[in-house]
Amino acid sequence: MIAETVCSAVSAAGLGIAAITAYRKRFLAATRLAAYSLIPVGLVMTGVVGWLADTAFSMKAWAGFGVLGVAWLLFMITRAVERRSGGTRKERKAAKAAQRDAVAPAASAPSLGQGSRPAAQPAAQPKAEAPKEDFSDIEAILKKHGI
Image (tube, rainbow, N blue to C red; front, side, top):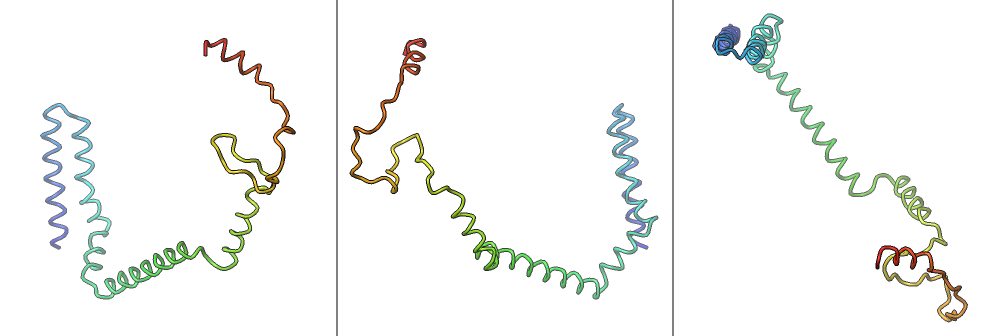
């Protein structure tokens, strides 16, 4: 009974503010305020307010909320543990296999920077065997731009 009275008072106050806003020639804001102020009366008329009042004072409902909270907490704990450990054993093996196969064994070294030599090449390979590279097209582009 008190919830219905409070909702009606809130709606009446909101409609009064909407009327003042409309008097000030702000019709869009007044219409929006009127819409918001009619929501509490609509909730009372549909019975939602009564249901909420019954739920708020019910020990059975609060116990249900407690059970839902514990379930959510357990779910979050299992997700955190799963992320830390990497999932099940099958998932970890699949991830290792995918990581091994991610890079081809004969992949070339990065072209930028001074990286280390690939392990596949012998260290005693003579430098004279390296083919001469032709940089004439690059030099022409650089000369064209004055560099």
